[in-house]
Length: 542
Image (cartoon, rainbow, N blue to C red; front, side, top):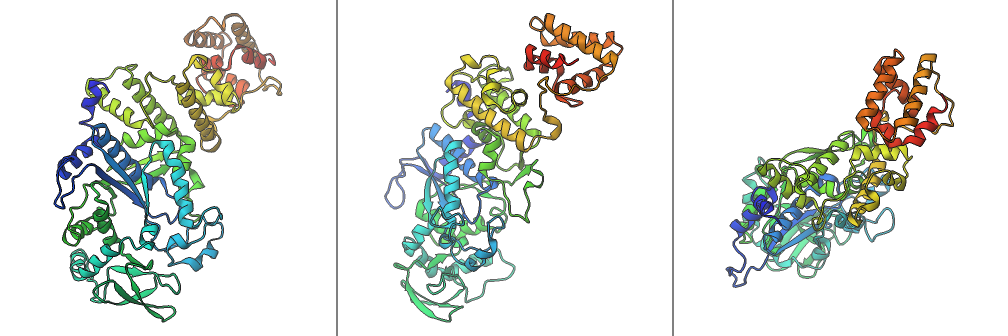
């Protein structure tokens, strides 16, 4: 890492929060109150897999990974844990299930006991977990997974639950500080999944002061006493479960969304419960904002239940660009994942950051340090030793359209690809796959075109227009390979003028002849991209 990049570690938000963790949680190697020695920092994230994990949820995951990466690069060992809250209750049937009505029967069950609609995994929860776990390494995110259903069903949290029951009144008072309607005296900090119905439609009747908890199943009317050390039925309510796990895992850092970080939200009450019930300090945290989605038209709808997940984003954006979107944006800033023409600008922004990092584009020293650090954090693995060959996204789209989606043909038409290193070729191919997916699914109609082959019926043209096209053919035959883009452009203007055609009308004529549209990419450069032989083949019709 260069000196300037080391300096940048003091200005990027991930580095700032990494430094804050060290400052607030103490240097490693120090002896703690229980006599143990702290040898790493624990950074946590988590989500309930009650449906497709959407790109907004991914913001928390990548935010933690960036801070973990910053800690490790500063020489601080860090554990990155990701909790699947798969013992949460199934409250609502997602509308994007193949047969939503068939899942109504599972409402109020723990989601880990709901069958996978596709029949590929042991549960609906596991299907959602596996889908994300398969994708995260693609963007350089590889946490240690914790499955809360396994832990609750193995009674791992028996002592944590008992402690909450012992401090039931304290917890109720802490929660009431942030409530307009106080909790009833019969409130308990736990929920029970009935052993008779698997539903959480139960009422806690009493606790024996040790490990025995008695409840009534409200649907069957049956009563039962369970042992916290042996039962899979008892689970802490979310506002108590969260601080209990901070204590259990020794969590030093965990961000949360603006809803959890609102005044009196679950982070505020969790901090109080962590201190006063579980005897630990809450983790260092920050608030992250929501993410919008642009340019998917009718593909997203609350009525259909469709959401945009990481899989959909990776169809359009290569992994480094996905990371760049998050590394280059402060977590508390709202932004949108674009599927419209802004996709081009997002790729251009990433390419600029890459050029700045490798010194191929000059900017001020402060800007260079900032952009260089963002580039480092945008990489899935190590930073390339030299700048990969860049194929501008817009130009790549034109190459793909000219090649009718043939990626090999499109990349072969870009200068330097035959001599590119393996890493450049890998990145170019991934970018080409993303570009073609964008063209096929999201690019505006006016952006797309199909290059004529010369075998189609010629465009109807007037005599003067036909004469102008003949002169273009002569120009291409004689000078195409020797002229640069500006020289070719000037020659086209002169041809239009010589035949009394307005430049706008002449260029529209050329686009109709080449692609059957009134507009297209910058004409001279476009013709050079098409190539001499293909241009001549089309013009032969005139």
